Length: 201
Image (cartoon, rainbow, N blue to C red; front, side, top):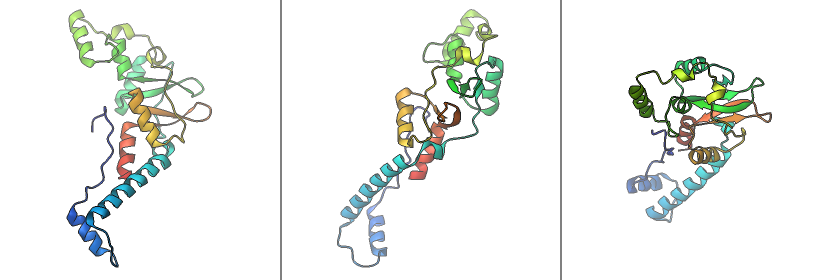
């Protein structure tokens, strides 16, 4: 599934044969047409889905074992942590564990000369033109130096519907979840949302 577009797992499309089989399987006589049956099902499904999108919260689907990075961590350690865990970004915290930013591959790419879009191919082109390692100027810098700040965060009780809207609106791939003190409680990624939407299906 594309990381650029969240898509809910669609319910199974009912055929006329499915509807007739369901009506025959139900006890008693149902005085509605297959078309009426399908319409009732679709409306009921939409209402139930909306209810669940509101009822299910970030705390129900978030990952609580989060790989956070201290703002003072050097970029070698930061890059190694992201590579080791196969993740493209992580929250950045201060000495008290409060979320102060997010560092991602895009931040590294921008630090190596890519524009706001953070294109990897821009970095390759820049590297080839200048015949050198474009990461060299980042030596000695920290996660706090290149992170995107302030971090976009949410409380644990935000609904997954609102999480989805926030990810789309801000064009981000992950949403750190903060407790009342601003400390990292968990994270909701696009993958977490896709799994939650499939559960709702």
